[in-house]
Image (cartoon, rainbow, N blue to C red; front, side):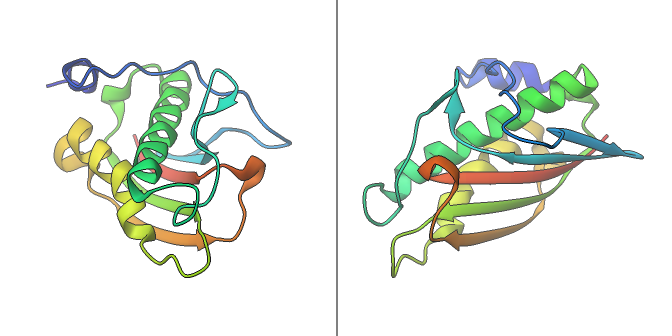
Amino acid sequence: MSVYEELKQRGLVLPAPPARGGVYTPVKQVGNLLFVSGQGPVLDGVARYVGKVGAERSVEDGQEAARICILNTLALVEQHIGDLNRVKNVVKLLGLVNSADGFNRQPEVINGASQLLVDLFGDRGWHARSAIGSNELPGDITVEIESIFEI
């Protein structure tokens, strides 16, 4: 099944690609690898999840924030290559979780992103990953994810 059929089956729509937030490129292609800059849970220019997991936000909130990060990532990848079905593999994620003191369940939060990628891409969606706690993220967003794809 195509990635687009999987999205539709799950009732998901890719958002408009997020605007660049600084002096960088959202996607950098090197050979057959795409390096995607960190994406937050922002839709239409508005951060949908802010605050720390383990304080203002639950693990489930963090997982939903992570899913939005991935949808933004996929919107940028599609903008760059034209068709998400060209993705050969999801290679790696680096997930940063805005974490309250003592919160140590970052992998559970980033599972929201990882599961969505496996659901959409099947075996091509399995990836290496790091899930790291942060004391602050830009704009107080709850999650930020950067990624590498093979095309």
